[in-house]
Image (cartoon, rainbow, N blue to C red; front, side, top):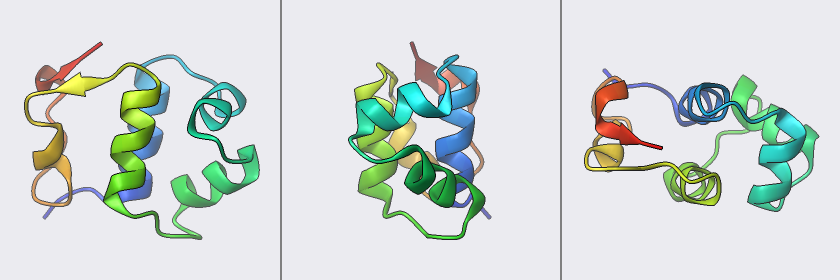
Length: 79
């Protein structure tokens, strides 16, 4: 059982130190839209999660594996 995409977005954003406003600007959406994703009000596609990760400089060998397949492995993410 993996993490929902919105939860993954929140984790990536918070762990990398980005505010909601800064991350939403990088992603190209409003802060309200990103908050909807993070809260699960709107379910983002996994490609949106990866777009956010790339936009804020998060890459990882196993980032694709966190796409609902298993919990996030912080050691697999590279900042």
